[in-house]
Image (tube, rainbow, N blue to C red; front, side):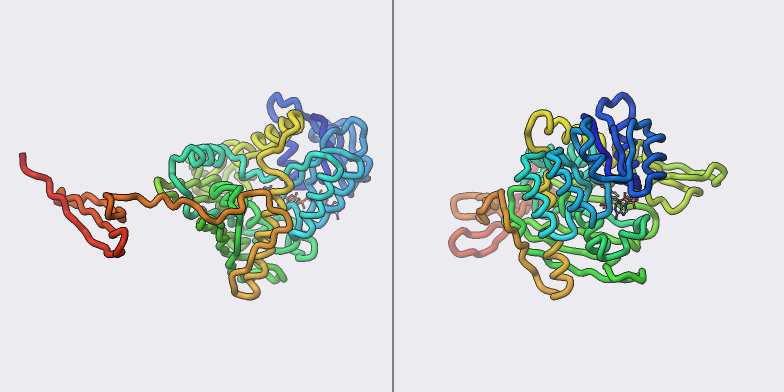
Length: 400
Ligand SMILES: NC(=O)c1ccc[n+]([C@@H]2O[C@H](COP(=O)([O-])OP(=O)(O)OC[C@H]3O[C@@H](n4cnc5c(N)ncnc54)[C@H](O)[C@@H]3O)[C@@H](O)[C@H]2O)c1
């Protein structure tokens, strides 16, 4: 693929480093930045043949097959519209929009233009996430009941994030978009998100948006998605997921504890890992940050999907659903009520009747619980199918 990069900041660099790493064949051929000096510097660092301070020029460059949007949140929509006009495939960083209305306009534009719209939700491509999802789809942990995802760090690195007009919100829109989509994948993307209950507050910073939030997303099959986000967390970037199923459990720690621990007196110093607050003492570096964060798998899926004319794992439609869930979360934080997830488009299941998989013990009873006790007895707790009465029986092992 020949790529135009829009933006030359933090995420543009992460993406470019992943794309141009090792012997990858997909290459950025043009970069746009508002500031021509930044565009030139980026082009030099990644050995790009073209740079510009005109967005349309990068998009319309005849060499360019796909455009990556790495601009602040308020710039996603105009950039997507420019790609639609130029009929260039587009992949956009998260969150897709500041609101569901904005995301829906972007979804409509790419579908009307007949171009590819990929949603760059990298945390749904990490090696640990993909392996977990495979296990869940394989039935290893049974029916998912609760999926919690947490992203917290000490706050973002550029002014526009902290400006509610440009970003669309605080920690919730910035980090909650990852958490919502992670849980949604684990619970099942075909399952309709129904309503959201959320607490959000500005606990530390002098800003209009929230710097800390916790939310619950109720799904039509009875499962609960939970997100925990903060821009006030101290100690680095904490990315953790927990999934509870009827047959098992998954715990993932994607960043702060990856099994790599290092002590240094601070003699060397410098960059340790994204949002790490210290560079001496006991440190928790990340072996290959881009890979741990899912970027190479994500781009492989995006470009293969363009070539094979199929949907990637994460589409503009998914970005729209995430925005709709977050819209409900923002509303709930204000009203302090469960707020419905309003979806103008829903392409998943419409049922809210799901098999709970209740186990029969015999023709008259359901099995509630079976447990082996320390004395060797097995206790069975049963519920009568007709009367509803709960009883227990104890099976004592016989001496041989
Ligand atoms: N894990 C992830 O997927 C991840 C991580 C970080 C950021 N992001 C997303 O990437 C996007 C950019 O964030 P960032 O961290 O790179 O920010 P950044 O501030 O580091 O970089 C933003 C870039 O956009 C340019 N820019 C700023 N305002 C502009 C405007 N009005 N018009 C045109 N260009 C403008 C800046 O000059 C810079 O090149 C955001 O949507 C953010 O949510 C995603």
